[in-house]
Image 1 (cartoon, rainbow, N blue to C red):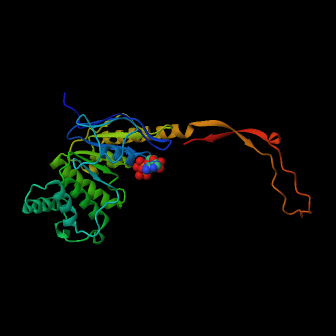
Image 2: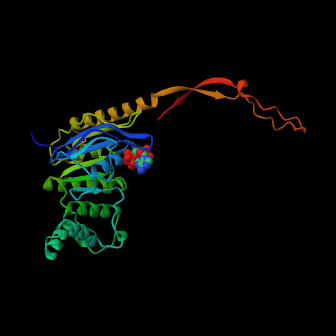
Length: 305
Ligand SMILES: Nc1ncnc2c1ncn2[C@@H]1O[C@H](COP(=O)(O)OP(=O)(O)OP(=O)(O)O)[C@@H](O)[C@H]1O
């Protein structure tokens, strides 16, 4: 049997005493387009960081072709929400820098050609000599995608790449990236908080379910929609509606479960009455401080999240 490109087995990751991800399992095969969808703050960036090799798991295995992922590598391209372009370099130079690092054995002319082809792929040939500050958010994110793909990664990891863009630009980029993926078939792990985006783009959608002791990946849902997908048409398809409903139900059920999880802690609540400030205080007439034994015990329900 073919070794999966990416595998996570029983992965747990936290910061100090706070567990963020708990017992996460994932299998991604070569050529897959997987989207992972979760609420804000559930650990999506933490998951991408583990896959990229930018963070280390506390327990479990993070594997690429059966080997533990140790540190960052150009084999795993990353696109972040905030573009992360170098502001003092033009579009062409930003991409060229990455190409020079990854393909030192190509001639200068070959590297220039390679760079230009990826700039053209994201439709930015007219802006090749512009600096990031001269570009719109959508254009900047196109540069980030071109830079990541120009390194010819085995897998492309995208962390909410379109979340900072307005809805119209986001839709355009979703379509463009979908087209590019159909030509290139690079393996993609796309993290998002948008169910429509997750379904529109991916072959498989996996919910990241919040839990009391950390979030975990739920059952993958296959997307049975033919490609190319037209966003205006698929929203009317029953398979799309069913999947969207199931995804939202699963995610909101996990969140509700979290909110209902309450514990009863015994808190000692002092039975002190607020001082009546309208009564003039007479020197020496302060109320006597209460002792611990005089405190009233009350049970208070506290929500833990
Ligand atoms: N370096 C860190 N040190 C301590 N806590 C962290 C660190 N990074 C993330 N966290 C915490 O881990 C939890 C998950 O964070 P993470 O950024 O992975 O979530 P997210 O799903 O990507 O959120 P968002 O959608 O808001 O970007 C949060 O509670 C966050 O405060």
